[in-house]
View (cartoon, rainbow, N blue to C red):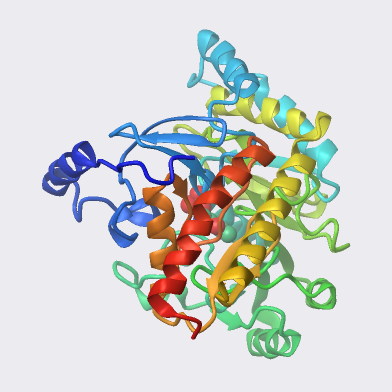
Length: 415
Ligand code: PMP
């Protein structure tokens, strides 16, 4: 690993200046590198496996995996071949290709609570459609969401109020993740108007330590929804396919009524899916939900290749093993430097925070030192492992994080 290499960013600087003139704010959304420490590239040029290159040809070991979509590795040959073959026939046509049926069948076969599937493009499309389906099915309005959870950028769920009206969120009620009493209280407030409870597989709010789901909490939500005749919606957009192919709460033993998937479903090709139980089939038919690109065949061919590869190989086992090795290596290093850290969330989607780091100064220094040396980590968002992370890649990354921990120790001492 090039722990002492020069990190030149002249082309990135030039592209940022050009972007600032034609893209408001220079960049937007979660991929705005302006919010990241100095040294992070804004513009990326290519990716292979778990390695990515920026516009200045700096190479990084990628621990963000495009914020989740890359699960087998960038430019996975099997997925890209399936996509290319489909592309050579057609992608966007007057009607869907047969891939849509094959993919719906594969999801229904793979995910125990899925009796049907419908497809969209982004996670926000899928979570928003789940809410509409629940409302159509129940004829009710109120929806419970966890305080601080992210479910997308539509007016009903965006974390920023600009451009929304109070009416957009008038029927949302909030609960605290893993606190069943707070859910009961919100459900009581909703009364006979409760349409759905939306929940993520674990608490993965940006900037906070992650919190795994308490199985008793998950079971409590299931019981409450059954009692109230409301839909239990699992927002599996971020976790889906990484933790379990059957849906992220299958290992917990709780089956939702509706699940929203996107991100890793097609290894980077744009696709989202809503799956659900038979009892919601009629409601799906009533809701008018569509989009010009929702039926495109290339991402569906990519999804078929991605999910069958995950099913038929040890990819998820290797992915978790790489995550374990990373967690273990970071823990050993932090301890050796006397730097107090917390590692939370599943190893497949890890998060590292520094004790007492209220303004993220240590996290910013740590990830800023890592990026300069060729390791792409994020100071405030959970990271993602892929099946392309070999033990050797993890070891190379750990050589860099060792230096980054030394810098944190140097700057902050052991406080
Ligand atoms: N739900 C969750 C849990 C997410 O993590 C995200 C994206 N980060 C979304 C919904 C929205 O997905 P998208 O950005 O594809 O619209």
